[in-house]
Amino acid sequence: MNIAGLQKMTLLDYPGKVACTVFLAGCNFRCPFCHNSGILSAASPSDISREELLRFLEKRKGLLDGVCITGGEPTLQSDLPELLADIKGLGYPIKLDTNGTRPKMLKSLAEKGLIDYVAMDIKNSPHRYSQTVGCTADLQALEESIRFLLSGAVDYELRTTVVAELHSTEEILSMGQWLASLSDSKPKRLFLQPYRDSEQVLHPGMHAPDTAALEEFVRLLEPFVQQISLRGDV
Image (cartoon, rainbow, N blue to C red; front, side):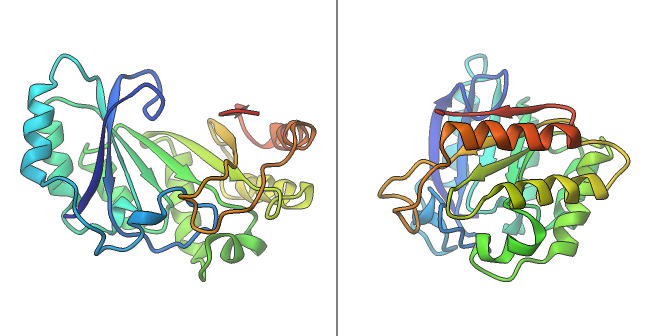
């Protein structure tokens, strides 16, 4: 288990809770707009040991309401279930951030009661998914994860970071139609997050769509989801 970072308190990462965020190293995507580019390698330097993390959580009982597990891609860690079981043993609800590429792990964590909320990234329409994630995307695995979440087995949200160079009205409409095709149930909630450029991004220099384009994206997606919202600075 390589814990690459710990944000000791956040009001944003876990909806409705005062939480901490645990960053696990290693990812199987190389999204050009990734803000965690420094921990994409599983060999990234470890920031804190598992034992130190658990001691921190023990001391923060009563101050924190939950724990967010993010990455990288957390489901790549074979010992993730053991870590989550230890955290649950301390009484914390857990939110998992995932790209959806490991549906078997996702299902197993939910069935064991080790996760309480899932945020899955929907990167783009199917025909531009691989371009958007910087590698060949396994759409079958992604669809299995989406269908599982839409079944209501665990509370969830879907979210898309929108980038002017990667998302047009065509892609956004195609993405909504794709999600609608996977289940009779509309996704519970979908958040659009405008891209923010920084030096930490894997490939800096891209741009967020303008406000008019973002509002148009929301309008296009409204028929396909129960709730659609913009998140972050617009």
